[in-house]
Length: 425
Image (cartoon, rainbow, N blue to C red; front, side, top):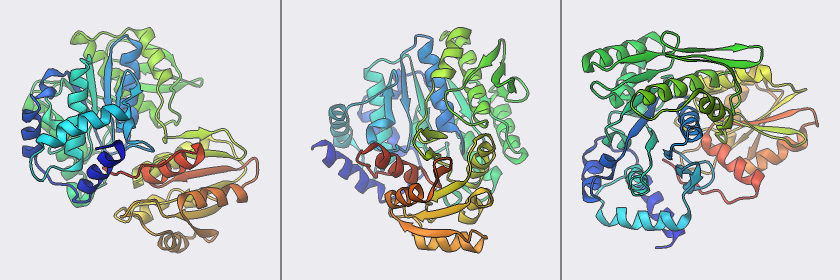
């Protein structure tokens, strides 16, 4: 099969959705010789910030001279973004080779994400990375990445999202996220709502896993424009995060705490490397600016907590007017996603992301108007929305594209003149 044929095959599997359980991925990895057992793995789970936290940790470890594998999902533009070694994306030829081998031994009913996760484990094991940073896809307990026994678990802020699959309360969702915790292995956690924190604390107690909590064992503060890290055993006073947004402070802190703990296990990174890594970290589509006229900001905020963090970060972004381009998935809490953003938007263009479960632009526009967003226009495709927003904006205005990673991915592809590979999962 060619690269495009591989993507078509994997995408077709994605149509059958999520199937809880680890039995298929366990059998698949066994057929591949259990590559996950040859890897040191850090799992990064949570609702918001897990991709940024994984990117910070990967950059810090690489700055310290370690060879890392980084697995993330979903991609923004190209499927190859999901697999990085030493910060470099996998090439299409390797995707074809890995996918052929994985597909050949996959048990019946294997899902898109199970096959892709197996590809990541196989790729990283064969390249002999020092550590694999694995962003958990959804949940944690039954996520395919959890087939590996992690050296360390990182849990970013837990919020309500994917409630159909994970539960309709913070406590229920926290149970799923906390499933990445391993007996006796350290856990780094961001600040959590009390209902989620209670679950994490109890899981750590039951498993005798030491918990390192942001705001308690480590923390960060903004001081004179710099981010100061108050760590488990070190202080770094002058950090400049390479990923924008004040909310990235906690993501950076969790990554640094994880790096400190990995140092106790022999993967040592010194303070200078930590500082360089935090500065070098990049995570496209998250508070990503395009320095055009007007400026364009891409952010993948796709749930209420994410849109609230985005709205707060906008307070630090100078502009005359804010032109919003928004597209969301139909299974999201649309009203809650829009609520923090509509009051600060001067004009809104709604779009339909190129995915089957997208909410049509016309329906989204109706939701905006119901919430008081009167200057709202259904623009159609993501590209059309970006074009119309640019036409409406003055040189000192800011165009913000948000609502879904798929919206942001399509917009980024349009702005860069690249093809958008609409493979979900």
